[in-house]
Image (cartoon, rainbow, N blue to C red; front, top):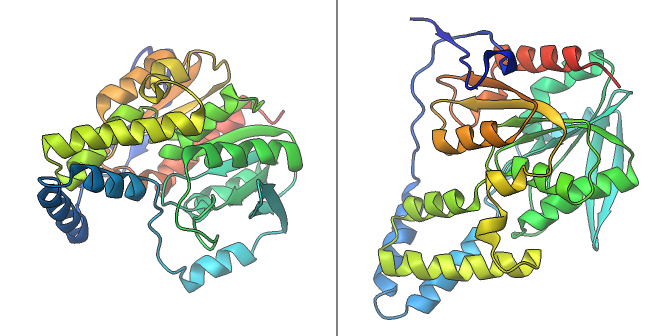
Length: 313
């Protein structure tokens, strides 16, 4: 049976197109994650504080592999490059094309190369595209970073490169994009792929990956909550980072893209985002999961069609 993009909410907010059949995406937990979880669960019986601290350090750790040759070749194809200055860190931003600026914001342990298939169409449509790896990602030095540094990159691009027309973001990058808009990023529209906008759900997913026991999971929740609250300078980060509160003051339009078989984001979170993001169009896919959504040709064509309908400002 053929699969299609489906709609959620009012039909006049939807973008529809056909999708190729695909098998259901399943979340695969790496064996080393399972072993870490088993070890920390055992340690928590006699030193729960230490186990929770180890987990909180892992929370901020970026998992990356040595860049392959084709990745180096991708970055070398850029037409120009700007060294973004971010609180003592230098972040290379690669640029293609000319026109209104479209910025790509990847997710945690992701990379700007994930957006590579969108670049040619956007350049042909008259946009300039900015692609980069966040701090501690890709070839950037370091092993740890945080959401505030993701946000800082977007704000620094606005300050150091120029006005941002559109942000296209994936996963945690969507949280960074929305939070940046709250903090002064003047963006006309956003395209959000598989968005993570709920820190509490992120925590629960993280806890489930490691299969943490109740005692360790509870203490980890307290420690990571306090660390993130300190980073953001708030009392309760769990209340701050929710779809309802993050989207409350966002008035830019855009496109929300979500796969019904996303192994990372729950359907309830997607519905909450759709409910609280007024003015967005919605594209729901089936069978692509959390990461393949950035590679599917029909999704890419739908995004380019959305950009064409919104006009080059």
